[in-house]
Image (cartoon, rainbow, N blue to C red; front, side):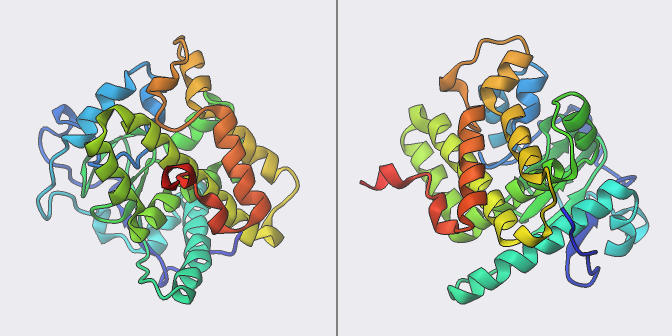
Length: 290
C-alpha cells in the first residue's frame, strides 16, 4: 500500500522503547480493562483465552510518570527508529485523515488516538503491556499499543506477510478506537456484564466489526492499494482466526472460546469492508437489535 509519509505535527506518538518502567512490572498482571484488545498471542502460546481475559480485566491503572519516553523522543524520532516504525506511523496518519472527516460530517466529536511503541514490556492507561499480548487498544488513554517485533512473528510464525498485512493490524486496532468514540465498546461491555455467558460471542462481534472498519479504511484509499494487497490482508485475517490459531497451537478449535472470530468470519467481514467502503455495512450486531 503506497501511503504518504506521516506529518510529525499531525499524529500523536509515544515511544516507550528504552524507557524507564516501574519496578516489578514483569511480575505484575498484564492487560487492559476491555475486551477490545488482541488476544492473538494467548492462543499462539497456548494460554487459555478465558484466563487471559480475566487477568486483562483485573489490570491496575498506572500512576503518572511511571513511564518516560526515551530521551523525550519526538514523533519524528520515534517514527524513524526503523522501517516498521515509519510504516506504522504512515498508516496512523492515513487512518486519521480517513476517519476524522467522517466524524466531522456526522457531527460527532473526534479525538485522534495515540500510537505507543514499546519493546517487550511497557505501561498503558489500562495496565501493563507485554509483547505476549500482541497489539492492543486501550480505551482509557485512547492508545494503540505496538511492539513492532510482532510484525516478525506475523510473518515468520503466523504466515501473514506483506505490508498490507501489517497495515491491517494497525487499522483493526484503530477500529476499536472508532468503537470507543461511538460508545459501542461501552455498550458491549455492559451487555457482557449482564450476560456473562455471552461475553465471548459479544467479543467476537466487536472484533469482526473492527475487521470490517479496517477494510473500509482500505477501500476509501483504494487508489493507494497495490496488486496483492487485498490478498495479503485476507490471508492475514485467515491466519489470525481463532480456529486457525488454536489448530496451530495444537488445540482443538472450540467456538465457545473464540474471542476474535473464526478465519472464515474474519475474512468475511474484512472483505465486506473492502468491497463496500461503507462503515454502515459493518453492523455485526444487527441481529441483536431485532
